[in-house]
Image 1 (cartoon, one colour):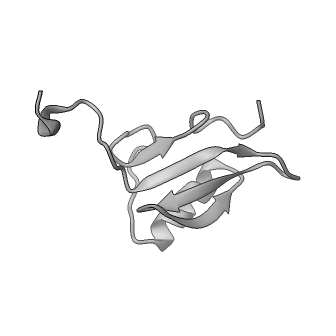
Image 2: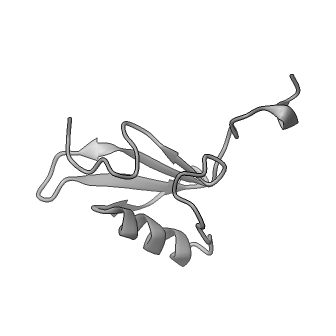
Image 3: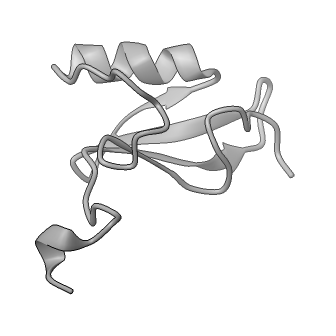
Amino acid sequence: MTESASPRPSNPPITVLAVQPGDPPFRIVEINGEIVGRATAMTDVLFIATAAGITVHDLDDPATVRWVGGDKLTWRPR
């Protein structure tokens, strides 16, 4: 299988890392490998992406967003 035929992209532009403890809990957001902010809800991810010039049509699209340690609905530590 060639890389272009791979079912999962290797480097989506947005990575949302696992939930960090805090009041409120948050997730660190990276764009193109650089930490650009912290999110406490999925809307924060959209605002951060927009500020970086990225339009997100689907938060479940693995070509756009990589969720680490949970999905778009995971906002509490496990």
